[in-house]
Length: 593
Image (cartoon, helix red, strand yellow):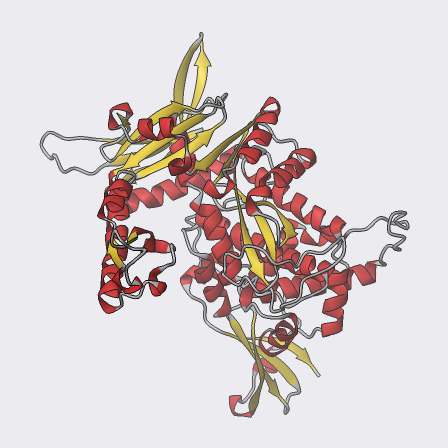
């Protein structure tokens, strides 16, 4: 089933904009493939209407394709009126209990309810609590006795609240406890939080990854055909490395440029929509290019994955990784990996820079395919837009370099080869061994600038020798790699996964599990809102939910505690509706005392 858009043209009105949006499916009749319309979605008379109808069509398509499956996201009727109140249960209180002189009311507290209402509901719906399920008997490997139901409920409740606190206002665990108490009306003991973290062992983390994978796979009819992979570093507020076999805090190459602080390497796998598939943590001294194969093998061993294309950036491009990937081709693994084309053989570089090898893919993009010495395929694209950007960025950097040279001719100051300083050259007089060192001059290497300009707009990708993907498919799939980059932005900035304040290896891993769970909920809700309503960023959704508050006021005269909900924006009401959560917008009684 797919979405088809049919445009109507008119000779009388060349500017006519009339496009019909339909859901269509293919079928075979007498050996011929035909198509039939499943549902007419509507007619758009503007680009804005067309986008809205496409969103609606996607929602209806998911509903039809999963009508016999109790999926995670069952799209609702998008025309449902949000302003029609839901049928309420019988109120146990009397009318006279609501008759109160508002001058006698005193506000006891004001709590944020939106985060727990929505993200808490999604936490329950996904069954996140199941990651803490333990066998009824003693685990022979750990000799740990299984938790009682009451103890297990406390662990789950604590984990849930800490995850929601990270979504709402990420901070240290101690500060999260204070935030929950002051802003959300949730009281937690900090020691209880740490005990919960100690219960997050390898088994819990494995179940968390399994939950992410199975949930995401369920959204796509049990099929994930492209996995995007990347790794990043997370630093600690510490200057001491771990020791021992389970050490994870180690110094290494820091992407945050904090080389004197230990770190951990986080490898993240997502779909092209940014939905989570899983994560792996490595010690901080692990080169991120060496994280791909272990993560891939773990995924292959755990799940029944078929015909998956792994997409990764040039940081993963090294011979060891590609050789190992090739050894897995027999198991239907394919890959698209960014290539450092300037580091290839002279023979290949001459071919790459020869424009006669390229064919036009679009008016803006040209593409060429080359066979590499090891049998792999190299796809190189040239983008006019990228060429202009490369040229602009380089000239901007060189202009700054020229100004610095005018201000200082000190050789020592410009010895570094970092950034655009690589375009500097040091010249000495021919009798330099007799001359004064002061005669040495620094100039801009114009020849090097011209040489680098040849590579403007070029991007190389390596695929396995048996890849059946077209050039168009390869470029399209690699272009979605930004999703994993955005995922790291969400984890690092929105959820503030770093700096990490813990020092015990097991608590470091627990912190990562808490952050990954928060990321799961964030991404799944974003996807759900996009499919059933419209595209809203995780930050926008969070801010909408933070605005849902309740004032708890007390009448000492009547000895009644009242809840006075805040008003809701239309977008917030829509989120409540699609989550199936009742939105309280009228005052109600909490309890009598």
